[in-house]
Image 1: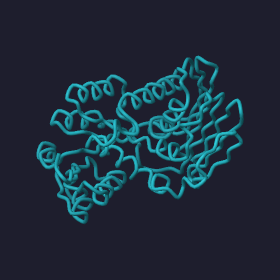
Image 2: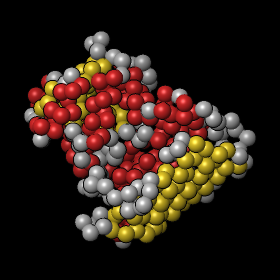
Image 3: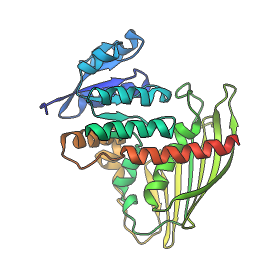
Image 4: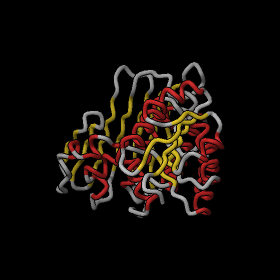
Length: 305
């Protein structure tokens, strides 16, 4: 293992830029390369951070030790599989793929080579810093609202795979139950993808979850309420505040921790720690990402059916 890992980012869009800056600033890693089909875009991200721009995948993979996949979601599995085939650990932005079969291909390929795969469900970072994942009660009910204004970003997938999948991952992380049914309604945009959706999911132990997402809202909101037998926790992820009426102590200063201030940085750092053997696993692994994807696709299918 080299003293400084060479980090590479596939995709020079908004999130590709975020990830490139993490590799440029985190200890033990340098930004080596950015890959994009548009060389000028790759150079605009890479060069100011000391990296090189690539448009050839094989040459890019030769120049890096670890890879972040921040390309359009429909290409996540393809790029992750290419990196794994080249022996590179991979951090994949959510969703890990756009089909469960492709997600399983990524998981299996990495397992066969003993490589780390992480997925960018960053709300898990804030929830862990808050202590939310350590509450020793099974929840009764979860209600999540995730709204944002229109954007050209992630138009290749629905709001379910773009936004709702974050809250699905948290629901699956805080409950040991398995989803049983999913019902909902939604509204498609002119380009034929779900931009507004609401789904009610029931689980096999009586837990239920309501997910409400929109990419056509006037303002950005990220709110989650979790009801437990002993009380409630309500989280505002945008303002990084929460209300807690349970008897279980949560970290009221979590927003001031490194994870609270920079969830993406903490998520990438967790990936690098797993790659180096300093942590047993990344914050969200391939199995968990596939489980969230599976439920997201079931919700999407229910809207269409």
